[in-house]
Amino acid sequence: MREIQKVIPITKAKSGFLDIMRKVEDADETVAITKNGVPIGVIMNMEQFEGILETIDILSDAETMRLLERSRKEFKSGKTVSHEQTWKK
Image 1 (cartoon, rainbow, N blue to C red):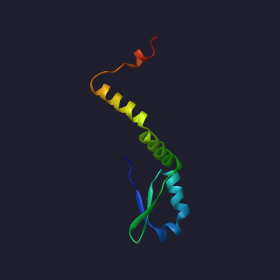
Image 2 (cartoon, rainbow, N blue to C red):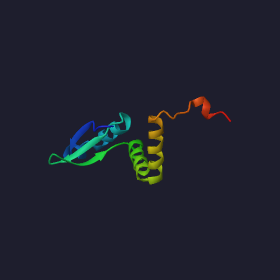
Image 3 (spheres, rainbow, N blue to C red):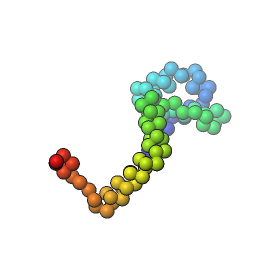
Image 4 (tube, rainbow, N blue to C red):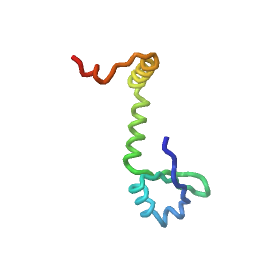
């Protein structure tokens, strides 16, 4: 699981917004913004955000979760197929 790499007070975030955005984009950092020491928001790059939305979509789809759980149980019980077997007709 990813963690927040930086915590910045909102006053510093306002004055250094461009630098913060460069770090988020270039260094793939996640930054929490605080107000009076309390986290109020997070800045992350678009790829991370889209990944979170995709994860939420998957987790909220009951059919997908049912199939994932079935696959997990089959794998745990040893019911697996090799890569080569998946291409045999």
